[in-house]
Amino acid sequence: MYSHHLRWGLRTALLTCNLIAVFQFLADLKEGSTVSASKSGALISEVDHVGNEFVAQHPMARVSNKAKLLKRENRRDVLKNFTHYFIHIAKTGGTYARQQLNVDVRGNRILKAGGGIVCDQGVSPVTNYQNWPEFFQRRNSNSKVKCNMYMTESHYSPLPDHVYTIVRDPMEHVVSQYFHCRESKTHGRHHGHLMPNTLDDWLVDWVDVRRQARSMNGKEDEGATPAYINVVGAYKCYNPINMQSRMLGYDPSDGIDPRTDLARRFDFVGLTSQMGISLCIIFLSWYGVVLERCKCPPNGSKNISDDKGGAKIAHVGRRHSHNVTNHGATHNHTAMQVQAIKELADDDMELYRAAESLFWEKVGEVEREHAIQLCE
Image (tube, rainbow, N blue to C red; front, side, top):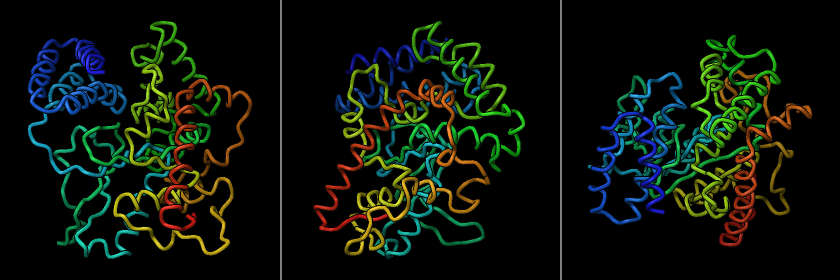
């Protein structure tokens, strides 16, 4: 495993066409040898994610910037208190999750007991965590609240003690990305006109990207293909190819069972379709408290909404839906769309099945340990 990370870390540096990055990588590796082998391996593993994430967030960035990021972010001189980390995968309900968790913190006297809130860092890379604020301060206010969990739209990191995320059914997730790019107040207002008029056209373009990548290099380095450069440059929005797997660091080619992989690296992986229960378990893991709102009354239903109740929760009002009027959870997919999404999100589908299995196993554990039944 150690040699695997070394090989891929060097590969990433070499791909930047910048030898300085290679030498810096080796120097940082030498420094890392003073800590445990597992920590060194974890740090090396993270380097392999940095370049891909930077390009994903800044698709038009120059390659030399990627090299500088690799060189800078692999330094670990000072480890800031970074205990709880929530990976916010776009279009999974993360905005609602953060707001509800903070409502629960404030409503249960956690702050008075010295606790803190979830602080959203937007799309700041997790490798920039040392620059994140330790306190949250509202505008026009002198009061500060401690940040006890950090959320950002960034990749998995082995540095925090506790890591959480929420995943979504890939069929819904991919469609939701398209409508966000077309309609949302944050993206659609400025770039929505750049998107194809139909979901079908958008899916076809991204399927072409993936097929071209496979024909050129046999795998998933679609960022190096002309089709990728054209599509990203034209649409200026999400890359739907296995977004959730890329964010969470799951790669089937590693040969690790996805269920084993998630259980080893994450404290808990929630589901958008079970948002209420997911947040109850995250809060329990975070503060050791079972919220009263999470306990079902006698003979109560585990999920008081329909099969897509999580989507209802995540889309409460325009604020949580980003002014999008069409949603992945309520969209009726055509046979062509289903086939295209299966091709674009095949790894995500494996990951989601594993997450579902672990989710219900964890629900059972919590209910037995606390003699309760969890409710939405």
